Image (cartoon, rainbow, N blue to C red; front, side, top):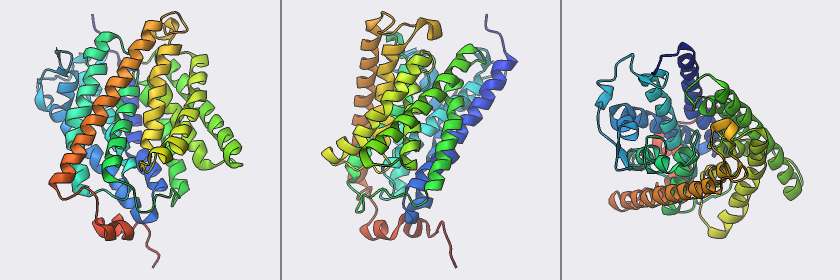
Length: 404
């Protein structure tokens, strides 16, 4: 019998707010600080408008299709539009269903906001708005159902505690697809106009991530405590390893590298946080920087795509590693499921299937959406003079810094 828990409810209320911190101020500061000064307001705006659009869609019909009764393993049944019919005392687990709706809304909004980092400085506002609408409806919602809502990957036994597939691989693959359609920026250098903003954003991400992962068990219990501990240590190890990599490769540690490492570690531990112990988390955190470092400094130049703020490089690639690593390091003592090392090689195969399915689906549909928009609205990229002069001035007629 399901029983309401005030303690679990209080914890998930807090976690929902922590994920909101990640979704709006953290991503806005992180991406805004990394962008060029002439584009900082537009970069922040992309996060705000995406989260707002998703918030409306989620309570209108998004949650219902993602978490409604399963249909054919693909999508949820369309009921309770506008959350009508969900009573205040209806429960999901031991917490109010309305709270679960809000918790998942924050995840959805964050995922779309993450995509924007790949296309800063060169995408039309109208194109971004339309892409956001299409993508949340036709990519995020189905994948969320597959993995968390009772769909075919969940039925297969794929493990994704807090969003390795649903959030990070999903957004990373979409970011790569849109970046390819948009083409390279005219100035592809990454010289953060305000690294302090980016550090603040990374710090808020680290803080908010404790609710992101810690709340995904929907209870205030030992599993939540384990998720927070392994998330923190994975981020810490990844930061140290990336700093060591920078020191070895370029001869000095960099702050940008340090915060990139922390985010890569947090991304990688996300699917595993409810299934691994501390040694597994440390291994996951230690390898994530190598995966993302390789993607950013070797694969991106080799293939020539312009993922401006390395959404694919960090979220996509470390998300892939985290999903696979879950199948390697999962221990029954934490999440009740064994991985490869604990004697269950089949789990690793299931994880690989989930990785391939998510990447192919998200990349393919995202590429198609971007291409259709590009052909139907005379291009999704801003005019040359707008890109050169900056989007803050040309699209918003505003400036982040007035020195008069």
